[in-house]
Structure formats: C-alpha cells, structure tokens
Image 1 (cartoon, helix red, strand yellow):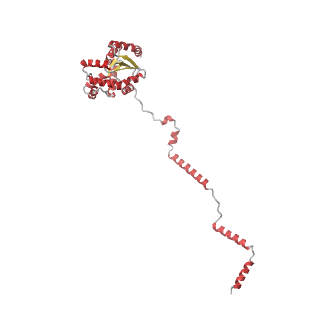
Image 2 (cartoon, rainbow, N blue to C red):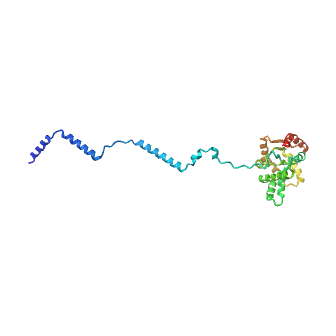
Length: 294
C-alpha cells in the first residue's frame, strides 16, 4: 500500500540539485556561530601576571615608606650624629703638673719608712703611709671602717681600695691646704693593680715608683726585731708570713706594671740604712731636680 509513496520520495530526493547542500551547511555553521557568540582568541597569560606582581610590590613599599619615613632620613645623616656619646669620665683631683706623687713599694720590712723619713728631711716631701693612715682610722672614735680595717690588717689582707684611696686623697688635700706642699711620698701603696688604676684615674697620676728590693729572710729578721717594741698587731710571725705572700702574689705585679712604663727606680735594700739612702739619692738626683723645677 505504501510502496508507491516510497518510490515517489526517493525520486523527489534525486530531483534536488547538488548545489543546495553547501548552502545548507553554511547556514548551519552560521547559526552555530551566532548562537555561541563571536569566535574566541588566545591571550598571553605570563606577561600579565608579571605586571600584576610588579605593581603589587611597588605599592607595598610605597605604603611602608609613607608609614615610617624616619629610617630613610637617618640613613642620610652623618655617622657622628647616629652614635651615642660616651659617658663623661672623671678627671683626677690633682694634675701631675701641679702635684708630684712617688709611690714607695717593697716587701714588709724593706725599710720604706726609714728612707721616706730621710727624703722628707732633705727634700721637703710629705710622707703619707697608707698603713699608718689605716691604723689611725681604725682607732679613730666613731669611724665606720674601724673594725673592718682592724680585721683586714690582722689577717694580713688588703683593705678595700675605696677606703685607702679616700684616706690618701683627704690627707693630700689637708697637706696642700695647711702646708702648701705638693710633693708626696706614698709609702706602701698601691698594693694591688686595681688600687693603682683607681688612684691614678681619680686622684693623680704618679711620677715614678721607688722599689726597695730585699730578700724575705732579711725582712723577717727586721720585722721580728721591730715587733719587740712596735706594739703593732701585724708584727708577729703568722701575720708576717701572710704579708709576704700577699706582697708576692698581689703587690709585686704593681711593680712590674710600672716597670713596663719605665717608671720604676730599683733600690737594693739589703745594705745598712745609710748605705741604702746613699743609693736612693744617687738614683733620684736628676729626677728630683726635674720635680723641683716643675
């Protein structure tokens, strides 16, 4: 029944011209293009990212610079203005151009006190014995350091330097005010390097040091002999041995310190007091003339 229709359909399809198919294909492509929008093109991604990153970095530093501009200003300031000035240092109480100080060192019993007395008599020095000043202070009524000094001396130990330096400075001021004298022999001081540093920085730089060199066996005999009449607490065999040890370990390095500066005059103290003094005068001849001119 339907066969003729199929035959007719096939014959009609054959009758359609071949040129119609391309127009239909073009129309379909155009329809798809209008439906999906204009044709797409590829974009360069990496250059765009690089530009964005550079812009972000520049913006960040701009913001930081506006927030805190001080470092940029300080960087252009001179180096001297950026440094903190050191604290002022204390100047010595006395100038070495005005005051002459000779340290007199040697072991216990070397004869320092005897030779200082000779120099006072002949050259007008003021003799300040650190030991005598300490003993006077320990016996002074109302002294806050009396018991401390007594304990240190009895044990053959070195009294704290602040006490000794203060006593010496006060004694120098008193001698200058009362006698108008500016030449000092400081006997038995400094007994430690820190005392030397403290005195020279706070009171007055020394001119030179007299060192009386004497063997321990000679000094021991002298001290025991002196102890028979001196009444000193430290003129006994136990205290003497402690003082020898203290001098060797802590006081002799002071001599070496000043020797390295060329400021030590060595004196052989094994001779008689007269022989030792003759040696002292010979050694000091030129130096004392220089001090008198000053």
